[in-house]
Amino acid sequence: MDTMRQCAMKFKDISAELTEQCGGKGAHLGELARTGFNVPNGFVVVSDAFSYLLKYNNIESVIDEIAESINFDDYNDVDMKTKKIRELIESAELPPEFEQIAVFYSELAEEGETDPYVAVRSSVGARGTNISSFPGMMDTFHYIRGAEEVIAKVKLCWASVWTTRGAMLRNQKGIAHKSAIIAPIIQLMVDPDVAGVAFTANPINMSRDEIVIESCWGLGESVVSGKAMTDFFCLDKSTLKVKNKRISNKSVMMGIDKDLKGGRKEYQVDPKKSQQPSLTEDQLVELGKVAKAIEDHYGGSPRDIEWAFVNNTLYILQARQVKGLKE
Image 1 (cartoon, rainbow, N blue to C red):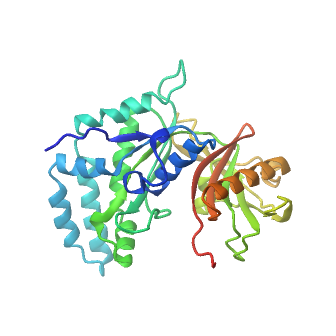
Image 2 (cartoon, rainbow, N blue to C red; image 1 turned 135 degrees about the vertical axis):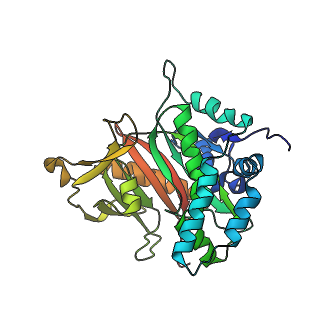
């Protein structure tokens, strides 16, 4: 079998066109970083690495055989057989070329630092289609530290192609399982004071003249997953003035698990802080300006942006096209 020359690409070498190599999330993070937006540094394990892993371990045909035998009308059958496939992937031996993952990880460390905290996130798509995301379908891991742990989480991302829900979704959409792209992202972890999502068009009333922002204390994963109450802000797109807002009682937040020195944990929010707005007026204006700049970079195509503030510094964590808007 031919060797693999490059199993990973740094953000600085990735553009938006590389969705088949880097998945939708990875391609757009690279594009934003190259353009000068404040994206935490990182790299992508390219989609071909997953295929190479299966060939290297001679399990590609075994997985194909199991996949072809799945009865998608029987949930238990789907659950049992996708679990078998995940176990094959998780126990697979890494090819020697994949040492590049550990090397790129070590290069993310600041001077004098070793083993930085990173997020390991799934970047996905489907070859031969315009699908560049399956929101919530694949696994993401926060506050991961050490090359061995990073590689273990990369394998779990690969395996998450075969979650029960992921396989069933592909079947429902008529997407061939072998066309699924999975390109894990390893990205420096930011520990947010506040985070969330921003839409450069209002997904509720379809207005292109409004920016909608949802935010919460701590990790923005709580906003994306719907696990936490969030603050809601609607801005006039031209003036960035607040047109409407709703401040929720934010009783829980996600952050680093300080007891385990890694991973994430749910915390109770200080009652005095829980009913305070999670974003200041200045932060709303800054976020609105950056969101508009990202939309402009994509030719005016409305964007769904994940962001975080750390010590009042804004970071961009993802930007994908807003789906379902009427022209």
